[in-house]
Length: 365
Image (cartoon, rainbow, N blue to C red; front, side, top):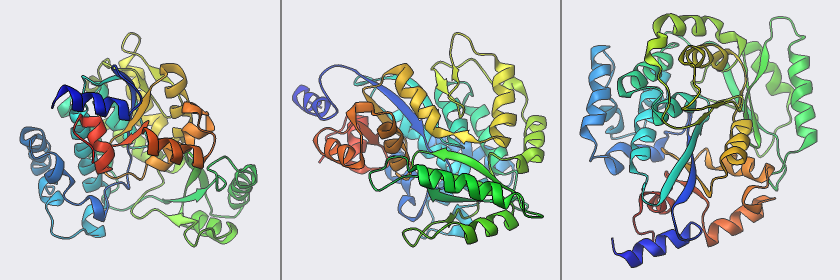
């Protein structure tokens, strides 16, 4: 790449010099029909990385991710179960992270949404390559014999992508009412920018569907093949995870990590036993506050831009909504965000081909 081209790309993301970047790893539900072939399209230059994952999975009798990614058609039955989706998403996100242009970006911290916390551990080096696939594949396969509960998502914002206190009060009221019904369990699972993800048993989720007003002909929306993540219903999964995955897999990170409580794990003060406990206990059974993780990430590390790893771009909206809530980059509404992105993108989604070029140092458009 010529010096002129490099300068052109740097200008697109907000000025000359190395840019401070907060990197965000996605969770489940981001490898969809449009992402089929993602590894083959963008990461054919990483055969050793992909083969290491596939060798691990073949030893367990699982389908290799290269084969999953190479299917001629996307299949809900094949691509969405945790034992397949988790490894696929990890491989795509980790490979994207490898492609970030370190001459243009200084990565100041990493975070992630839900399963993205496991990926963030790998990005930061708190899990080595073998440990990462072991943790992610093990936890992703925990409900291969049958899901425990489920999840649904519901908006908690107005048309300008700002918090709607009426919707917040409604969600809190519905959770309280449903839990008073015999045999029903319903919990806040994830605070996801302008959305609330709820987790519960079937009775609880059904009750919530009858009580929440229909919005945009989509919500409340069940999340297909998702268990009751980040709720007390997964106590047994947490116990099994701690038994299967020893603390020795965890290491001191090379980069700061922001978890689902907004807690920072520093390379200089990270207790591996506590990291193991949080990851495989609290993080599994308690709400995951991605909104708080993002708020801490931007306020504590003052990034010039936020890079969201692929596959897909389903996390782009929630990330933008958290930035608006914190008036980061001066954004106070969806319109502010849209206008700013057209001029000089500061939220860079690697699942978006044009924005991907900004992260990798290639020419965009």
